[in-house]
Amino acid sequence: MYDTILVPTDGSGVAGVAATQAIALADRFGADVHALYVREDEADEGGEIATTAVAEQAATADVAATTAVVDADGPVYRAILDYADDHGVDCIVMGTHGRTGLGRYILGSVAERTLRESPVPVVTVHEETVVDEDLETILVPTDGSDCSEAAAAHAVALAEATGASLHVVHVVDLGVLPVDESGALIEELQQAGQHALESVIDRAEDVSSVQASVLSGSPYRAIVDYAESEDVDLVVMGTHGRTGFDRYLLGSVTERVVRLSDRPVLTLDDHERT
Image 1 (cartoon, rainbow, N blue to C red):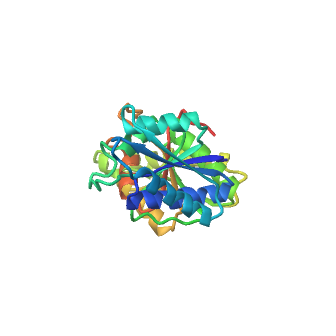
Image 2: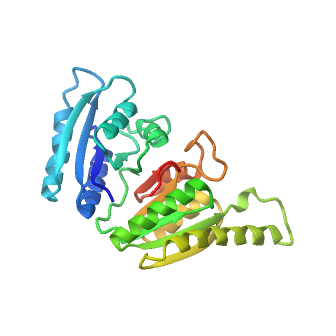
C-alpha cells in the first residue's frame, strides 16, 4: 500500500516521534523511508545530523532509508511537496510543529500548509503521540461527505492490508441544534448518521472486524475521547466535511482532532482515492 514514506525532520523531539511512526509504517508495509531536511539558511549545518539520526533509527528496525538535505527555494512546505512528487512518495509523516514548539500546533505552520496541499496522505503526530507498531485498530469518522468517503476507503484498505479492526463513527453535533422538545430532529440526524455508517460498512466486507457507532456531542471531542477509550492506533480523516470549505483544516473538526488527539492522525483530501 505504501512503498515510499517521507518524514521531514528538523531534529526536534516531535520530528523524532514522526520518524518512529514513519519507520513503524515502513516496517509494516516493506516500504522505504526518506528523511528530508529543508535548509532555509546556508549557514545551517543541522541537516546531516537530523537526517542521519532518522537513518540510524531505521537501520535498527531493518528499514531502508534515504537521506536528503535540500535548500528551500520558497516556502518549506513547498520543498517537502516537491520532494514527495519527485520521489514518488506515497505517504508523508510529520510533526505538527517543529523547533519553535508553538502552542498553536499546526495553525500557520509547515505541517498545516502541507496538510492543505498534499496530494498524498499525511500522518501527523506530536510529542505526546502514542505510536503503536502493530496497527491493530483504525478509527474513521464519517459524515457521508465525499471527503469522508475517501477517508473511509483509505481506512478500509489499510485495515484489509494489515488485518486491523475498523471502528467507524458518526457524531451528531448537539451543540448546533435548535431546541426541539419532540426529539424528532435528533432522531432524524441519528438516522442520517446510521446511513453514513452503513455506507462504510458495505465497503468493509473484507475487513476482519468492524464496529460502528453513532455518537453525540462536540464532534472533535467525541472523536478524541473515542480514540482514547478504544485504544485506537490510527485515526483516518478527510480534511474537510460536508460543508466543503476552501479553508480546509482551519477551524474544522479534523484540525482540532489533529491538535488534541494523542493518536497518530492520517488526513487526506477527496482527490486522494484508494
